[in-house]
Image (cartoon, rainbow, N blue to C red; front, side, top):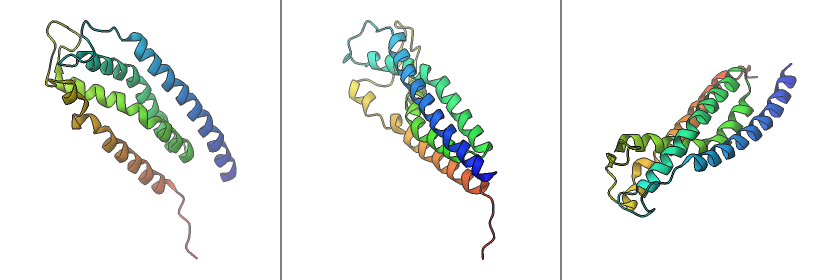
Length: 161
């Protein structure tokens, strides 16, 4: 029984990783297609061109990340640790656009109203090198540790000889 579960986990793991990579590529393409370039040049100050582009990309990736998190929890609940690990490994890059969206939401007002939009980023460099934009790595590490703890707690206890 355990062997069957491991084989099912291995095959499901590969399938889930391939599906997620395809969805990731589709979300990236859709983010570029849906982006309507503003009337600003890429290196204007403030950098609305990049702020809005990153916001649209984050909006497109948000449903993908929600599905990814749900799939990881289902895989862990069903005792498919390899599938959960692979989903996390291929999916952790999808968290970045959503994190950027959150940071943009916190640091701008009226983002999609070009006449009233304001932001705390005065220059392209202040946007690009804002330390809050890189906080997603801390969250990804925390999620990885939670997944590891969950995995260890779910292992069957074996008697020590």
